Amino acid sequence: MIANSLPFDTPAQAWVRAAGKGVAWLEAALNDGSRLPASLHDLASYYKWPLALATLGRMRQGEAMLTTISDCFLTPDGDFRTSADKSSDPLYGQISDTYTNTWPIAAARLLGRPDMGRHGLDGLRGRFVEATGGYLTGIPGQYEDNRQDIVTVAGCGNAFLAWDAMDEAAGAGDCLMRILEQQGPADAPFHLYIDGRGETLEGELGIPETLARIDPAKPGQVYVYWGMASVFLARLYTVSHESRFLEGARAYFARHDACGDMVFDGIGCCKTGWAAATLYRLTGDAVYRDVVHKVAAELLKVQCEDGSWSRSQLSPQLNCDCTAEIVYHLSQYTLELASARG
Image (cartoon, rainbow, N blue to C red; front, side):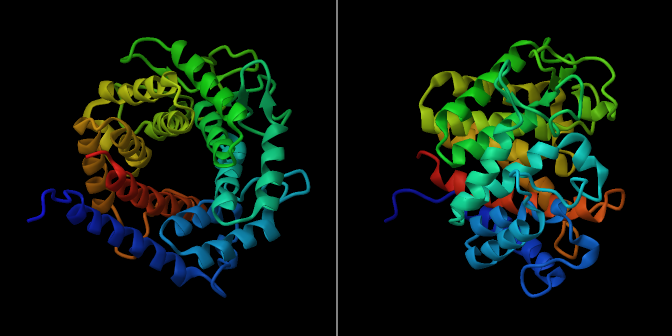
């Protein structure tokens, strides 16, 4: 008689099938197995795919796409760019110039490219803000306020963590903790940016309002920012065993509570699920497990017939990015829940 059931097998099968459909969508677009057509040949289209593929065991394909990224987009100073611009979609240069670098750097560790990974880490170090422990949102000098945002800081921390650069990863974690401490109550707007001195940026930032702060009273917010901060802090705790980072991960995640079920509407919940899956593995708290199942159900519901997660209002590059991200997250939900303590 089998003493213990495997409660995640049945739903996880659906998650893996959905991820597989996403990969099939990518494969239908590729030329020579690793290069997207001219309309999609852009850093924004590629940067998450090597890690997503490797996590699903598609190592050779992940390596080939990482080589394409290195050959086509890696600059001598360790940056990744489509051209003088980050991407043909201006959103990437505006809000995620540094963050976009972090995914290929993490993938380079998993796929055995220390040359590329270390070169990319040096590029991130050129965007370090000593006064805060954070990393510039854009290239040095792009913004007079030397702005940093929580998803960039978390992404950089994740890249350093992937390469065992613990002091730098812990510094990013402490930066996120200080940003959290500056926020108002849970039902008040959460400001996503700090300046070069570490002070919250609350005024007009020249970007859409929804990308500058999260308003828990409104739908369609960038919950991915909270999710990324939470999952990085949780992963940092796993390696460092410093309880403050687990407390920070839980505190960032708890910010979702003030938003209610609006969190689960559409693809913006994907990193919420990743954070919940990681926290469930670490704590065994069934509340986190239930969130993973709600998020995964929403993601499967909104997957397109062709296997992608595309939206008509988004650029082709951003749609390719979103599809890679959700493929990766669905695999992470499966792995984290399967690894959870009994």
